[in-house]
Amino acid sequence: MKILHTSDWHLGRQLYNQKRTDEFEAFLNWLIETIEQQQIDTLLIAGDVFDTTTPSASTQEMYYHFLYRASNTCCSNIVIIGGNHDSALLLNAPKHLLKAMHIHVVGEMSDDLSDELITLYDKNKQAQAIICAVPFLRDRDVRTVQAYEELADKATKLVEGISAHYDEMARLAQARIEEVGQVPVIAMGHLFTTADRSTSGDGVRELYVGTLAHIGGERFSKVFDYVALGHLHIAQTVGGEEHKRYSGSPIPMGFNEANQTKKIVIVEFTNGKRSINELEIPRFKALYRIEGAADEIVAKIQSLLDEKCSGWIEVTITKGDHAPNLSTQLIDMLDGSPMLLLSTKDARAREYVHLETATSVKLEELSPADVFEKCLNVHAVSDELKSTLKACFDELVMQYNEKE
Image (tube, rainbow, N blue to C red):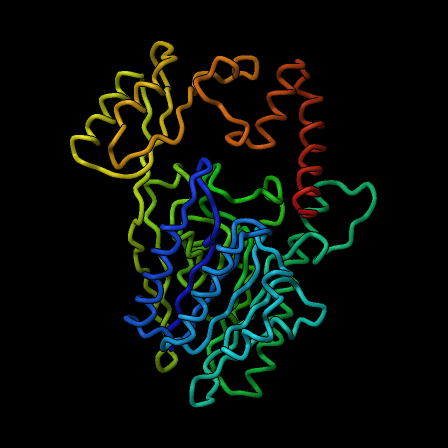
């Protein structure tokens, strides 16, 4: 059996208000071709199918058109779990209809955990695998809120609650093996784990602050022959264990991911043996992040023009004299070329009171924590009080994101 593991599509995502429909469609077309070329039996999508809980009609059409096409390939089964960006109600709405096409959807945690346990069968009605399809687990799913809790107590309860959920799924999977025979057991999840790489501003919503709800790789049961994770956008293993992996996002979600190699993971089980390989995803649109003094930036962009490059550009002035007309100069340079300037920023404008003089610093470029930090600095809050206020603010952000 061959499994293709992907996640974090974020369909409908924009970059500086630029639509990325062409990139998403190119990826989905490539994925269909890859399923056929690699003769994939099962496709796993580990959460964050959509970028928002209210995707547009055209974005939903793209998603359902892909599922229709994929169901008509060699792929016998598709399993989709909800991520923190997804609307569980939207994902679950057509689940019974999709199940008739061997597409299994688990948008949110169920009161009956057996709903998250899926036995996959091939076209000959033979059991192929058992999937523990665990969606994104929210705070309310795994613990009981108590008054006057310390942040450390919340963290402990979150980790214990999520770990207990996976332990119960492992127990259910073992019971199912007794019914259908020995087959691979695959766990799916959408969560943070410890000791993994992430990048600031990469679209990963910080639902839990610091190390809250970061699950250690050892917390996953040895029953699981493979752990297919989503949430982090960089393809990587968990704790150096090859069979516990994030597939990462298929296209760069922002300019900070511009130099990352995007991948899918292919897992094959043959005669009780497991092999794991990564397959690089082509780059469908080039993103260029250019930094330096104004004259250096102009020279780098001219070099791109000389090489007849195409794509989108983000410029950040990091040194040198103030260049108020740089944006206009660059737009004129790029006029008529296949490149588009999306943003010009001045990284030297660090303090809140200096933001007005920045070339182009937008609120969307700052995280809530950045804005709160600037407010604390403007009001000259003491370091001792600052730590207390930050802890309170972190709790408010977590509660807001949970409600979202």
